[in-house]
Image (cartoon, rainbow, N blue to C red; front, side, top):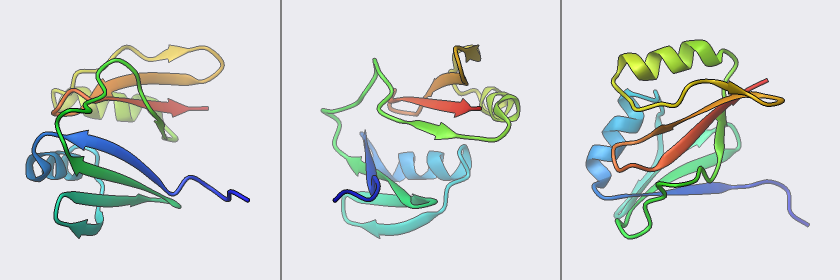
Length: 110
């Protein structure tokens, strides 16, 4: 029946600013752009920014982004003054960080 997760949505206050941040800080490339949203393709899944400031997710990460070298990504984000947690290990290595709007995002590596 279900084959995969197609799209993950992140709600942002200012789509233009958020798009630039996701491009410059996270290195993502735009796959689709329509009025009110921008989608970045990560393998088979789209990470879609939607301009809507009432659903900012500050407390919990809704998904995590897999990376091969978590130390390099952690250092890159800190170098770019992104608020991050320390790297933790509890079966996998992981840490969380926040985008411009305060959405909590997470990175994992194993």
